Image (cartoon, rainbow, N blue to C red; front, top):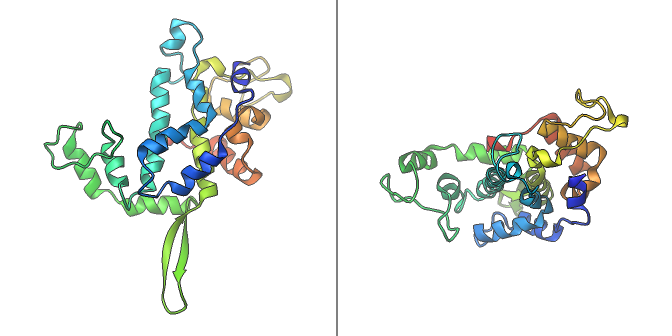
Length: 250
């Protein structure tokens, strides 16, 4: 298949992925650095596929959006994760307002600031959002862990990043929408029918089911899934295949 031929021999740069997880809350780890480090996930190269046809260059996505749109949405999901881990530094501004041309989070001065659209709504969101609820979401997901620090006389609870779990979330983010590209949709094989209603020879048109099919039957094709340990694979499969988590919820 095109998917297999495109991904053959590619490897996820796990050293970079682990660095992303270990530095994500560090104020010195910039948005530009994070953006560059996304190159660690080879599945993002799939968005560069060109079938040599006008249809492929245009839409040819199950969502009806262009390939470029879907790539930008995936990058947006990555940055939603990045900002939510940084709400104690620049995350609130980045999440609410985005970045300028130098990849620096935009800090709005007032509701007349024309560097962004709808500045009044962005300011209201930043000032009124329940940021502690976002943080609690990360704790409940096992992405942040509460650790006691101090000594026998005085101790405090500090939130620390569960780097292993975060690496898995980053890997899931890299692959979660790739099957919206019709060009790489898998065909159900005889030994796997029926699969969510698809029979042998059917192209699995639902992008969530298509990714589930690859995860279940051909996991070696996707290096960012293949090389996770078994526990993290189960978590990713549950999130994608059972829960059908939508990164747009960010």
